[in-house]
Length: 489
Image (tube, rainbow, N blue to C red; front, side, top):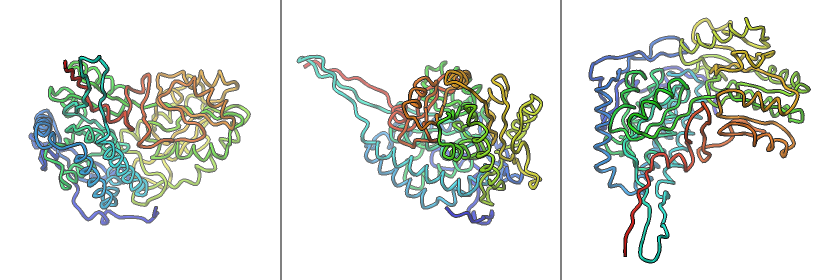
């Protein structure tokens, strides 16, 4: 990918600022707005329509109407062809979407371009599976024919986070499309631009009105109203544990299924026989990619004593080379998404310093950047198991290291938290790694690599990291209901 620098003039289209409901832009019913901020400059990009109950009701009603109209009558193959057309259209506009994403959340343009291409792959995967979700026959005996039919669950709600705004929309909306559901998306208030632009693109390529609706706004207003709406029949949410609990409790009131991914404090376990060059290389992207704002980041390094210093030296040398700056400058790391997130990470760093942990690298704002929500890549060691840095998800470019002697100690550290999203093991002995992997409490275990997987591989957490799985064929099944049909001959 090109490392060229960009300017705001490279984005030659207006910034989307209104809800997209029933195939058209809509101002908020109450005419309220809220700002979306460029985290690289701390300047307001534009004012966005602020959704509340009335806006959500318009969107859900439009989606319900779509479920009963043209969208319902489309064959799965026709839905798939429409989704392929959407992927082609998005690919043709990849740079525009990437620039929108970069302005809204700060990540380097080359990362945003990679994200858009990943979205195209997600749409195409689900498009190809749309006509392959099959029922089954049930052997009741010679006097009966019994079979199952897979049907869309109905209108689905998609509450997406700000770290991969467009990617997280596609991760749940694409399988919902494949299943035949109509959707209402509530993007994070920090990052609504690409979700709104995506809805307009869906309409442009031929999706019937009401199949995709986007209402911008705050979680406690638009998000809560969306979860509670009686016409919503399925919910997908990615975000914090605290918010996930609220959504799950509210969904239960309407007996609505919910898929929740709720973050992690993921251990990368490096054993004494690991390929340290490989592990330290992977740890750079694992810990600092997207400025550490990744649920599945390698935010905890669990290191066997004998190799700890060598690993941390290699990691620090690699991390020192990372360029930090505005997303349009197209370096390695951009800013954090908001002042709220910046202040949160700074508070963790202050707590770490006061706890006696050692900052080996970074530890605050890069001195050359006097505005924007920037944090330098940070490595902290001498962190004990009770330290807040070792127990809580920081969601910034901050990696902490803990040491162990035995495999049992490594397992106890890895499994000792409420989280259970991802664990990783580095060892040249695959039998040793697989034996350890069997005992790790996580929805995914990666061996000798980080961020292993793709749109085909199911992902999700256990314990406080969530419920259910997204991506792959299980991701489509979230949006399908099984109907049994029995016939007496």
